Figure (cartoon, rainbow, N blue to C red):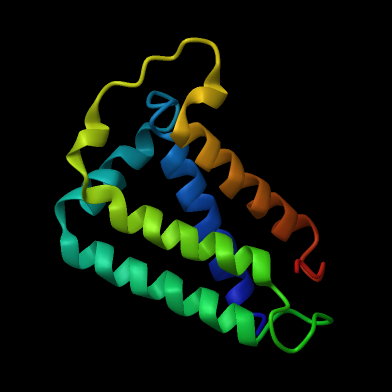
Length: 133
């Protein structure tokens, strides 16, 4: 289903930017309000969580053409499931500690998650019919 493609790209881009928010707070300040919304409202987090799970499940059974009929977009679907659980875990207030940037950004777990989400986003954007099994 071609409708799932832009939805999956939007989710991957949003979650990648949310995970980069811990490191680049000044540059990504437009997302601070959205992150606060996710932290404060459990119902909003649940709706987004189940929506992402639905998108990833549908992507498994209806991949983009010319992919195989089932499991054609396996890697983007798995990354979306991981993103759904990342969104669901955003209520944890222990993440509010200021992140100290030392120069080795790869030691920051949020930065690594953002890299995974953004790499999957760019691969899925540049090669939409690439079979990612």
